[in-house]
Image 1 (cartoon, one colour):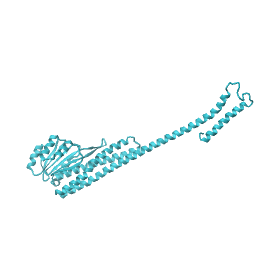
Image 2 (tube, one colour):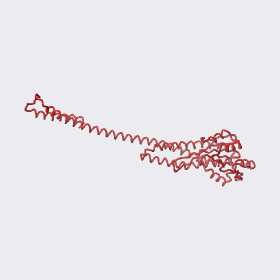
Image 3 (cartoon, rainbow, N blue to C red):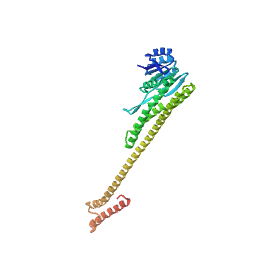
Image 4 (spheres, helix red, strand yellow):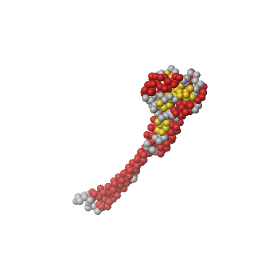
Length: 338
């Protein structure tokens, strides 16, 4: 059912619990209080029914029907329209799930249209009904309590993101190859978290100005300032997370480059060592080739050869072999090949 809870409040107490929207409209006309209508993924017809009854602005209704809106606040005459982006951390998947909540606030009504499991508006209603003095302030008190709940539900999200960033830091220094993918995925979540939370500061400041202008009770002013303080801390944590992830990505890139440089240096050293070995092998091959060349020439079966019948021909050939070998050895040694 789209209608999750529906009640009429007078002086901070629930005086009626209508079962249908039409019954709510009829009862409200006979009571001097306000209605709080809680809808969960309503149909277009249900939204338009509420819009017609409370004369909601068509632009606000268009946004509520389309969904996927940024966090914002808009005032239309005596009515307020807020889009909030609640969030919750899913431990099993280590991810943040973002929702969307539309809130219409008027002199005698509050309409909440929820499109996700978060925030827990049931607990908000129970909390207000247990404190009639606060609920007696009317629709503004309901608006404050909803904002307070949305901000409070950001706390587990902040804790979950902080834990994920700690794990990423461990992965970086452990040399995990998939850490860059996780950094980018977490960065997208942090950016989305910033988009949900950063507009809240301006929204709450605008509400404060409106509370002063319309003479809202001082006690609600104090509660709203407390919500603003919590919001500022949440926004600051989101900014810090984004900076930490940027630093983590920089460190990861540095470590990857360092490992690549080390590998390149190791390959270069290996190549140099292999080059030195090739030089040595080539040098010895050249030295051994010199006597082989002389022996090959003198081993040919020619009748007319220089010094063939010379008494010192053989010693000369041997001496020539050794002389060429030692000569090449001296040359290669001087060049550092041996």
